[in-house]
Image 1 (cartoon, rainbow, N blue to C red):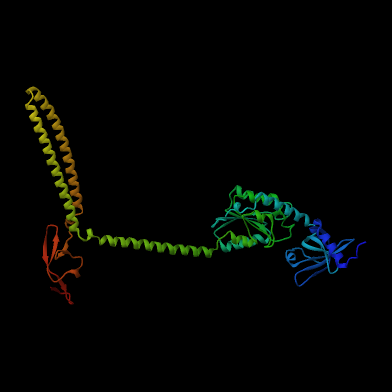
Image 2: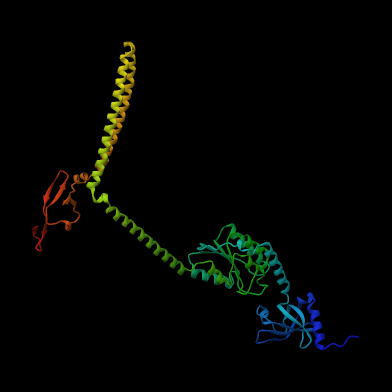
Length: 448
């Protein structure tokens, strides 16, 4: 016989045995709540009972904050808890992790199974999410015509972005008929390309009321949609599988409307910014072009047309001399060749000489024709160059009635450049000497 155990030793032994049983570390228990008490710390204390037994239970504040069930005496609930022993009293106690109303447990298990399955398939991956359009022209809404969600979405859209057309698909959002209606509405929107972005959802409710958005038919329609979808089911704390599969999840229907639309004031600000940038770029472009014109106007060639004309005339003279030199060289070569032929002819019999001379004359004639053709081409190019030079000549400007003024060999661009000495006024057919004459205060001219 072993030594007797202390009470605490026995209680600890029982506690260890219970906690070593994995089955008892996450067990679901259904029963009725009694002796319910919510502590100021947020912890929940109550007794769970049925017709034959009862057991104390505690739910710590962290887990209690996620409970959506209205916990009260007499409520039937399903608990997910672990079983252990409270050392101070030696009583078995349930340490609750999750709590829901009786009847919801099966739905919750189905929710978890489908969520895990779709997550394994990769339906929640970010790479599958479509971006929302920046400026949608048509916004689709799939919800109940009687719920507050439609009013909240439509009001927000009209306030923020009245330019967009609203395409509304009325459906049931709970009950047996809700699932096929919601799925078909999403499919029809895609088949007819009815909108650029789609909002689906409803207001808050219990898990049973939101269940249509956890059904595989609705979730599949969302997954296969080519139109970006924003899911706005329930309140901020409500999560459905539609939220995970949709391209974007909104906390509320109003938030969904804000996500799919830009704000008019923000658009006006962006347009104003673009207008300022365009104006600034245009002004810079004009300034650069003006600076370039100023630089060209002040260039050497435009400042001194006589110098420019002189350079052109020099190039023309050089071309003319080059043509003359080439012509003389070619004539000398041909004369030398003709002399050589003449000497050879003198050394052969007359008949052969005449025959060879005839052939040579023919060749010489053809060569002279080619030379003549070359000379004509060179001459035509010379005339073209003279014509181009003449078109930019100041003389052509003078022929149209303009004159220019020189003083001390310099062009005069302003009356303020003239000194008291005489200056020359150049016409197209000659020039005259003139002197400056200013007007006095009475409008009479005064010679300087």
